[in-house]
Image (cartoon, rainbow, N blue to C red; front, side):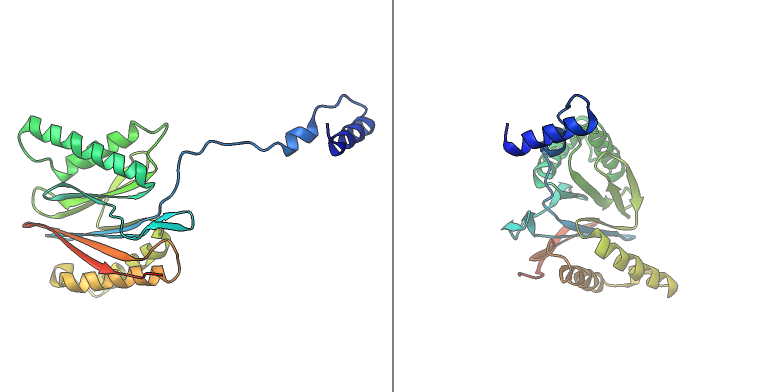
Length: 245
């Protein structure tokens, strides 16, 4: 027993007149909590339109304050018309995306046709919910074309709850970008503007501006942008530089 510990033992004994209960040890004991999770950042925007979907992700991979790689993809192709994007812990995201694609391939082999984006959303929800007691530390957004070739976006939390949206932002910089998205689409509605009349390139330029504004305020977003456009012809990929600092 050290000198400080013996002092506090005598002090507490004399003050209370009761048996010493190792208060000093209970207050100063450092608990070693097991934490298997880590946040590797990632910000994803997904927008659904009448005849296409746009999915955008940054490429910066963070581990604390270090940047192991600046060109990490977080978007995974499920089928010719469906894309799954995941933000959060990359190890969980990589395993979850691989498991989802393998299971969907087995499902499509059994029914002899391609899975619909709605059925894929329900399957992903059940897969996440099955791990609710030790969940995947990932936040997913599923984008694709439905049976009528209309854009669909489904946003998931880590335990499987999901909803269908017109546009959505998930990931580390969601708090910075989601208000910009809300303001942008609210402005278009006030002008009675139909998004179908707007070219995809104008929409891409607006999204790049949103990411650029967020990258000036947060260190977890930057380096590059990956654009995936889903339409009737398939999936188109475009890459852009964002900020390398």
